[in-house]
Amino acid sequence: MQYRSTRGPLDKNLNAPQAIIKGLADDGGLLVPTKFPSSSLPIENLPKMTYQQIVHLILTLFFNDFTPDQLQKSIEQAYGDQWDSQQITPISNSHSNNYYLELFHGPTLAFKDVALQILPYLMTSAVTIEQISNKIIILTATSGDTGTAAMRGFSNQPGTQVIVFYPHGGVSPVQLKQMLGQRGNNLTAIAIEGNFDDAQTEVKRIFNDTVFNQQLQQNGYQFSSANSMNIGRLIPQIAYYFSAYGQLVDKGKIKVGDDLNFAVPTGNFGDILAGYYAKKLGLPINKLICASDENNVLTDFFKTGEYNRQREFYLTNSPAMDILVSSNLERLLFDLADNNAELISKYMDQLVQEGHYQVNSIIKDQLDRQFAAGFATQDQVSQEIQRIYEADGYLIDPHTAVASFVTNQYQASHNDKTPTFIVSTASPYKFPETVYKAITGKPVSSSGLAAIQDLQNIIQQPFSNNVQALFNQSIRAEQIIQPTKMEETISKLLTSTY
Ligand SMILES: *Cc1c(COP(=O)(O)O)cnc(C)c1O
Image 1 (cartoon, rainbow, N blue to C red):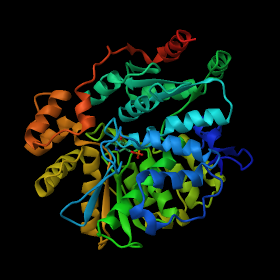
Image 2: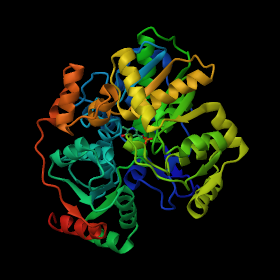
Image 3: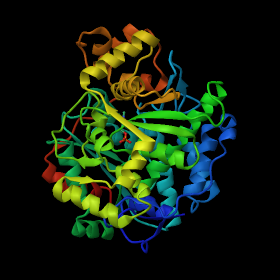
Image 4: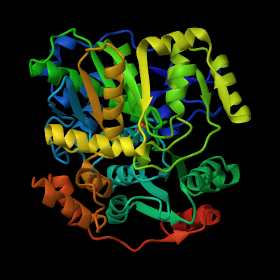
């Protein structure tokens, strides 16, 4: 399997290990298979398969430059007993025709773990295959979930070092505790005086700073990335769509071949794109429902075919979805445009230069057929958390609530009776302040761990092991720097480990 850029010509193909190490194409495009696998996965076998077996089938299709043994070992280590659930991504019932697909049973309590538990193993295997002797520096800007999950995944992985920058005061109390509590001899998290965009902009600049990169190279280092544009994160996520389907067949709720909808709380479009890839691999999906918060650029896009980033940016109670440029959408458009890199290049240039682009009618027709979209305001998120708690005695986090609200809205306005999975991307205990207020109507007087405890006092259910583990972490002191000092700080960090 070869990979190419969504923007570039066909002649610069990479194999999977190269694509995973590289992260992004040189021309700024995203790496995608030159030719999508034509085989369908055996749907009828899904109910009997373990999560690990499903991942193995999928990785074998896309990452066939790895040896079966490398894949097998990576999967065993990534999806072992650090998960609170044997199914890895268990499903939960509801009183209605809707189900929850719980992606938050990993060590950092959010869906990023599904990919970031396996990426480090794929990365170190890739380094072996490509015979790279440099140490790989994973450089990441985070608004919370990615940084924690990357540190946890890469902790003590030989030949790698993780450096995470996050906005000072811009992550939730639980996320801060998680980042400062990660243990490993190769992990650093540093706060910057600025917001997430400041961190992200500077990280991108450092990635492209030729002089700095040459200097690193001379000292035996090179950068790689663990963000959701990395194909090594996207492909493993396809597995939970198949697993969810198999679990529902196993419970007797659907028959093999029946259609399902998936409603996905969307930020950078990685999660929902994995669903689209699952559909291309033969999973019977009717609609993928793209759910956004008040940053509803995607809702407008699916409605009009125009992507317009020129709008106000809102910080909401679903912070992982506060985003105006959904990078992985580019991969969907590339596929819907029949791999027309020239067209995608044109759209992406327009987005940078004019702040918007309009897709052609062929692409728009495909979007209409395969997707639905909607958004929820912060008040609607709170009401939805409350409504589901009242109806089912089930707690959902704010991101999941966005998808749950949009699903209801969609089902009320369309005559679509397809059973629907609401993809649940974070544990409610990761956002205790919002969830507490939603179900009690009163703000919680505590924050962070104390708020988790206050929430549990109402719910009266035991913590999972991974929630309990939060209480046993000791944390380091926070280090805060100016964004202009990021490069210098990286230099110093690496020099001290030469
Ligand atoms: C990252 C994240 C999302 C958004 O996922 P994308 O793949 O970026 O669309 C949604 N919910 C939570 C809790 C997340 O951490």
